[in-house]
Image (cartoon, rainbow, N blue to C red; front, top):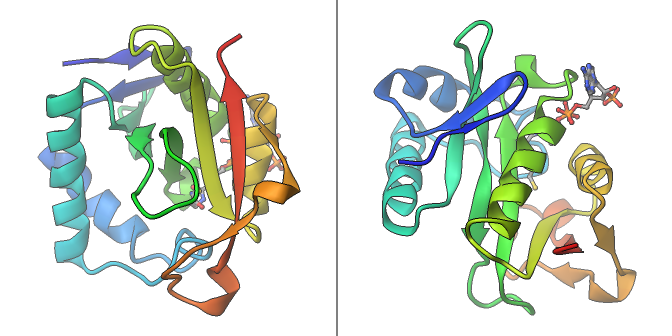
Amino acid sequence: MVEINTERLILRDWQESDLPIWAAMNADPEVREHLGRLLTAQEAADSMRRFQEDLDRNGFGFWAVQVRSTGEFVGFTGLDRVDEGLPFDGVEIGWRLARPGWGHGYETEAARAALAYGFGPVDLPEILAVTATTNLRSQAVMRRLGMTTDPAEDFDDPEPDSPQLRRQVLYRKRRD
Ligand SMILES: CC(C)(COP(=O)(O)OP(=O)(O)OC[C@H]1O[C@@H](n2cnc3c(N)ncnc32)[C@H](O)[C@@H]1OP(=O)(O)O)[C@@H](O)C(=O)NCCC(=O)NCCS
């Protein structure tokens, strides 16, 4: 079991008690604006179980993120193998916070810790990040992490939930 502590956050295994907030945030149109359709409660529960299975199997994955001072679960941050069928391969960093978790710098803080874990114990030479061109908040996090993008690597999601989400950007960061 891996647990990563930052100044204000804990990246940890998932708990059953995370499910109500996890399901609610995946039914929130603002959180899902650049991700695709809303998830049902069952889909949210299934995804939470898969994230924990990945963590157990690989020693890294999408960790639940908890605010240390309040114990509040606010979303996930972590590392995952890139889906097959995309024009690149490797491990990507990903994140999703419930709306009350935005605007505190939590994501940049959690993602810095996940990058350090990927470049350190997991020994990755490079970490990628992918998002819709429209997702400016997520790209701002990528830039704050020192990730860079080359417009020549922009690509189309083969199965977007909506045409607006088709065009995607790829950010990269190599181990220093
Ligand atoms: C992407 C996402 C995680 C970004 O959240 P975010 O709150 O914008 O990013 P951070 O947590 O790094 O916080 C940065 C903001 O907190 C502010 N902030 C407040 N207190 C801060 C502190 N102590 N330290 C740092 N920043 C602080 C910053 O000024 C910045 O504000 P700004 O957006 O007005 O410039 C969030 O929008 C999200 O979950 N979106 C939905 C899911 C999604 O799209 N996921 C990505 C798919 S690829």
